[in-house]
Structures are given as structure tokens and as C-alpha cells.
Image (cartoon, rainbow, N blue to C red; front, side, top):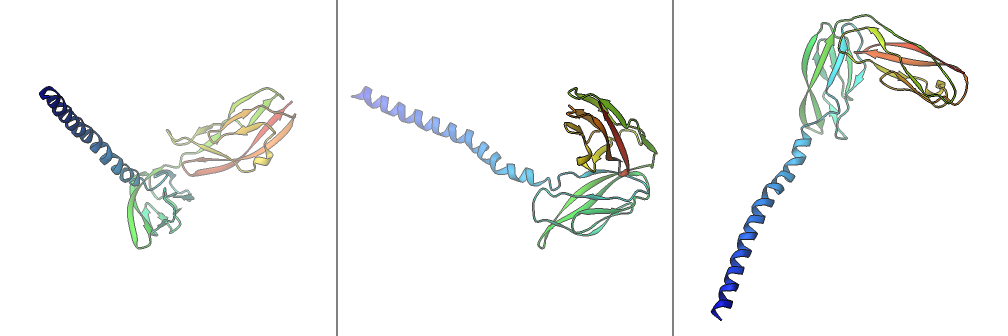
Length: 209
């Protein structure tokens, strides 16, 4: 009888020890899970670093992570302003790297988010290649690219009339010309190239045989 009583006592103590251990392990995890949304709330904009060019009109838009937010209009830096819709406009006056605060508001409550504006000197550039030959059924692998422009700035490429692209062919935002042409013909595709806000329209010629 005494032996059975000791077995019950030891079992009770073991349950208490295990319960306290599980509680101590799960408590920090619960605290971490409660803190996670606060960490994500620190990021207010999809993108907060922008490359601009001296003397070139700015045409950009800030994209909030959360819906229903408006911007407090104001002067940011070096000739650039923001309106209530998040549109950046104006002309930068001098090169440099600037940190400019912007206010995102929901009703009367606002929070600050810092933008980084990298203003570069106006360095001329030109497209490197605009004509690409190809064959029906054979994969294309070309690149438009540019010569000149400020160093360490990646240009962007936008097809302004996708309907002009041959069937099966694409031009990516990095200037890559790819895909497998399905039909022969000559196509002239309008493309807008931007280098730190310094943009120009070109025509890419695709000759498929």
C-alpha cells in the first residue's frame, strides 16, 4: 500500500515539472507571435528608395503597404514634392543622397516614413541594340541594353504597346528579348527606357524569318 502511495506521489511531481517546462517554452513563442505584426507594421511603403536625375522631371508614385492611406502634401528635398495621392513631382536641383520624411495618414492619425532620394548627375546615354533577327520556332536570346548613363544604375524597359510584339515574343523590364516566335514578319515595337528617371522612347525592330 505504501509502495502504491509513493508511485502516485512521484507521478504527481513529474506532471508538475513537465507542465512548468512546457509553459516556460511556449510563453516566449506566444510573446514572439504577438510581436510579429508590430515588426511588419514598420514597413509603410512597398519601395522607399528612388534614383533621380538632376534637371529631369520626376514622375513617380509612392505605394503604401496598407490600403486607405493618404499622404500629407509637402516639400521633400532638392526640388521634389509629394501630393496627397503619393505622386512625386518636380525637378531635382543638385546631385546627392537625401533622406526625406513623408507623412502617411489615416484620418487624423499620421506616421512618418523616410524616403531615400539618390539624385544623380545628368549623364547622357543611348540604347546599345535595337534590331533583333530570329527564326520561327527558335528561341530568341537578346538584350537591348544601354551605353553611357550614370554608373551602378540599372535601366528599366517598358513596352508601351504590347500589341506590336510578335506572337510568342516578349521584352522584359530588364531589356531581355526572349520567347519563341510563332510567325515570320517584321515588327516595330515601341519601348520606353528609363535611367534614374531620365527616359526616352525607342523602337525595337524584330525580324523573324
